[in-house]
Image 1: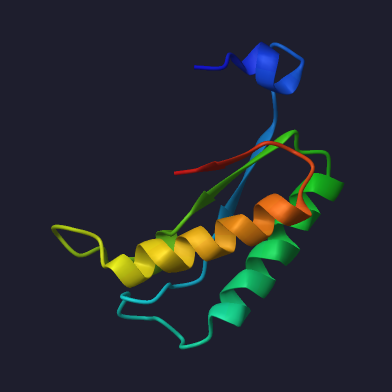
Image 2: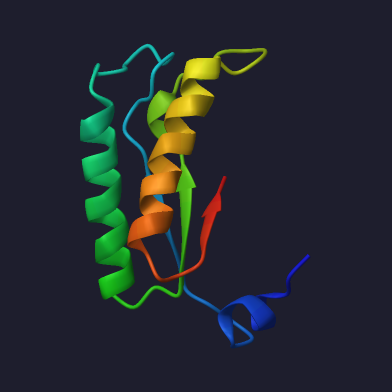
Length: 96
């Protein structure tokens, strides 16, 4: 595991959170993955421009969460969104 000091070049870091819009498999899924990606990119770029040293991504927009295994469409969509964020950002990126 990489230490925070190694990853961020400092002992402490400001890490912002990108809350994704509802994803496929969620009761509130809006039907357009492009909209999810566009919002996530806008939020992540704002965090980076605002001085955050890292970014976490989570799918809180999927609440209420279903019990059991996560829908494969949800996993695939989150992977696609995070891949776009990774290409766009210079700061470290993580998934919650």
